[in-house]
Each structure stands twice: as C-alpha cells, then as structure tokens.
Image 1 (tube, one colour):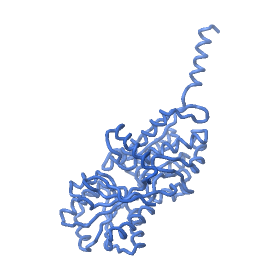
Image 2 (cartoon, one colour; image 1 turned 60 degrees about the vertical axis):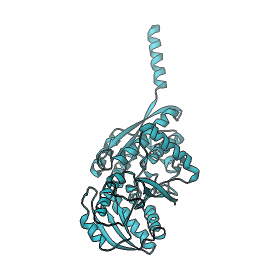
Image 3 (cartoon, helix red, strand yellow; image 1 turned 120 degrees about the horizontal axis):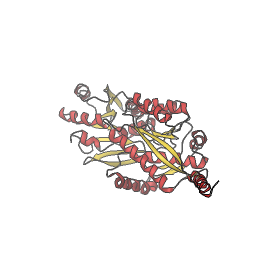
Image 4 (cartoon, helix red, strand yellow; image 1 turned 90 degrees about the vertical axis):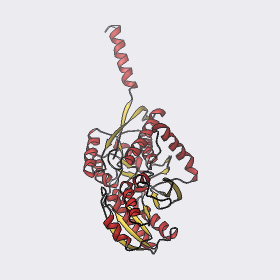
Amino acid sequence: MNKTLVAAVLLAIASLANAQEVVKIGHSAAVTGPVAYFGKDTENGARMGIEALNARGVVVGGKKVRFELLAEDDGGDPKQATNVAQKLVDARVNGVVGHETSGTTIPASKIYHQAGIPQISPSSTSPKYTQQGFNTAFRVVANDVQLGQALGRYAVKEMKAKRVAVIDDRTAYGQGLAVEFAKGLKQQGAQVVAREFTHDKATDFNAILTKIRATKPDLVFFGGMSSVAGPMLRQMKQLGFNAKMMGGDGICSDEIHKLSGGAMADGQVFCAEAGGVDAACRAALDKFRSDYKKRFGIEVQINAPYAHDAVMTMADAMVKAGSTAPAKYLPVLATIQYKGVTGPIAFDTRGDIRDGTITLYTFKGGKRSVLAVTK
C-alpha cells in the first residue's frame, strides 16, 4: 500500500471518528390556519432549544452530537396529525415535541407509543392525553383539571360571579376545559345558567348569544381558541351584551384583541395559562422572552418557553442515560429533574408535570396583564 493510500485511509478513519451523530427531534403544530400564531410560537421555542444545544456542544455517551429539528404542520387537524406522526416515526426521530392542541396530540400519541418514541407536549392540557397509559407521553404544562379548578375559584372568589354561561367548541381541548371549569364552578357554589356549543371554525354566534343573554349571566366562559373567541366578543358588543368572558390558554393571546375587531374592552376578558413561574424563576423566563424577540422579531405568544424546555429536558435525559436511543433514555426521562426557564420539570407516574402552575391574566390596552400565579 503506497503512502498516499495509507494517508487517505487514515484520514477517512479520523473523519469517521470525529463525525457527529445527528439527533432528530420532531415538532408538530398548526403553523397554517386560524391558530397558526400558536403553532409557530411553539416551533420557534423548540428551534431555540435546538440552537442552544448545538451552541453548547452536547456530548452523549462520550460522543459529540448535533441536534436537528424536523418541523411539521398538522394544521390543527386530528387526521393530519396522525399522518404527520407517522411521517416523523418513519424519519426515525429520537423524540417528539408536540403536538400543540389536545385534539391533535391525543391521536398522534398512540402512533408514537407504538413506535416507542418519547413525546413531550408543550401545550396540550386535556387529561385524556396522559390517561391512556402510554409511558411515552409527557407534558410540561398543567392539565385542564388544574386549569378548571383555578378558573372556577377565581370566577367566584375574585370576580364574584354567581350566574355563569358556558360555551365550548366541541374540540377535545374546548369541551374538556369547559367540563372541568363547570366542576370547579360548582365546587365554589356558583350556578351554570346556560350551556351552549359551537365549533372551532364558527363565525356566527348570534343565536347562542341571544339565548345566553336572556339568562342574564355575570360571566360567559368559553372553552376554545381566540380565533373563535375574538369574533364572539365582537358579536356580543353588537348585541349590547356586555358580560365578561373567561377562558383557558386557548384565548390567552394578545391576538384576541385584534380578532375582536377592537370590540374587547379593558378588563373584559380573563384567561389562564397552563404554566407560569414564581418570583425566583422570573429572571430566566424574562431573558428567554427577550432572546426570543431578538431571534424572531416578535413577542412570545404563550408556549414557546415550554417547547424550549421540552427540547432541553429531552436532551438532558439523553445525556444522563448516555444514549440517544429512545428505549435507553425513556426510563431516565420518566424520572428526570430538570431546571428549565419555566421552572422545575419533573413528571408524575402518568407523565403530567409535578406541581404545575397556573397564571391568570386579564387584558389592558389589548395586552395581557398578570393577575396571579397559583398552583
């Protein structure tokens, strides 16, 4: 063997030795359609996590790895979500951050479970997601049971609501949240005076709003997204129906003011985000928000920090397990203790976050304003 050939072989061996393993993290959310601003928010948050890991130079099992984000659009549609899930499984992703809504997360979770791929949702709140018995399913936000109880408590004790109308959009998220809110309301001694339904693409609410107005509620609770709540507020104003509105994280976006056509009054809308931090963690979250704006030129909507932390928690489990293989790091993920920008992250036996916090907001000048952070 001549010297040139020997040198080439040695160079090839050295290149293989130094080659980085590519770790593929899937992300799926609605980045098109009426709630695309929520989906793009989580995608951006996940991307910031990937960029932070690669800048750090993560080593897993003695080998340097490079993380790659495989971002897919599920359109907020359950059928499309299952197609996307299969696509990510076929791409041999090492883990998944997503999906965005409960209606897409729940059907997709079965596909990930069958493939043995860990999934962390940064935003899905339906209790059903983690009640399926899938050891691959986790979430980094509180669930609707916690949200419903917190909102019911606040509605009665702080807002002094006694007569409440409840509307939901019939999605897994909206219906589930409305049910839990009604339970929380009943525990506090208030009365549901009207129960109505719409759907997640509705634009005309005059019939149900007219029926509800006749019951003279103090408060209207809406289980659904701001893309529906905004137009609903506009039509409430047109009907001279000035009740306050309350909802979950689906309406907890500054976009709701724009979507209402400016009809939303200051202090009219109250919402809860399935997350939040106490004073001790505020600086880290504020820095993330500042870095996000510098990176993308826009403000965080809601769940970008949770998507970021989902990526970082997954990577931390890989490092501690010494492996990027899903079967190897999954048991470590189940018992992980990670300090994220959204606070401490640890999961219970179902995959729900332990000691999840709730942040309550109202809106002033079209912008969210924090009312309280609670458990």
